[in-house]
Length: 374
Image (cartoon, rainbow, N blue to C red; front, side, top):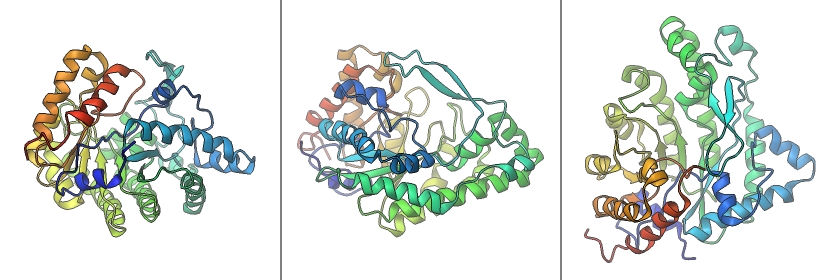
């Protein structure tokens, strides 16, 4: 398979277009990987920093490596130029609701956020919480990287995904409703939450950026609904973006581009994200509210635009109609470079596999720059 990280890197840096449009997806669900490889994954599921240590202490490193070999082979075989690596979260929480997973490739249970209660709702909760120690995070992540660097295919690099984002982790730990109240009634607690989460995530970004096998850093931090930001732009600018900027600076200090994945319509703060935070690329789009074609026209000369094949169409559109749709996105977004094809969010376990594979095949063939105007 012809894989080369420089193909994607040229897109992230807005350089001259490569031979073809590269692929970019935040990650594929493990159920999709299992379905397309025919291999069952075990230890990599529900991985935490504590579990990594236990796996190594129990002498099960080889079993964990075998899981990652399957994952790496999946991305390599499909023609990705990088390996998306979801980092285990150091922020345990109990305010979740498990429900039956009704996807075609069901994982049994799907975990949802409990919006009405939080793991941390008060100063007492904050002080009692078992906050992660940086040295423990470093030991677990570096141990994982030592395993992975032995199996990384030639020509590929790793793009780690931080364990959630600045706003996400605060809202996940506090609960949506308690957080929304506290931002007006207990701003000291909210500020301390952002500071604690921000420091840990910026440490993780620095640690990951220093690894030679890492080609870029990605952060998922969903900040919007279809109608606009989840919290006011002034709160984002005061409490979230300074930490985003520090994370970007850590990546840039090591010469690594920074990719922001953020769901929702956040047009009102895009100038902040580009000019102040300094992101190099934006991922996550939805045709009904914030289509990738619009973002390419507005911002494609300043940042890379990644993905954008609508999740609803990927999941439900008839195959032949879907192929025409993918070609139309390429026609609008690819000329001039600065675009990588992929889905609007993640390769979830409910998407149509035939549509997913068709998207990649069209990217390989129709997305060659010798036929595109630029």
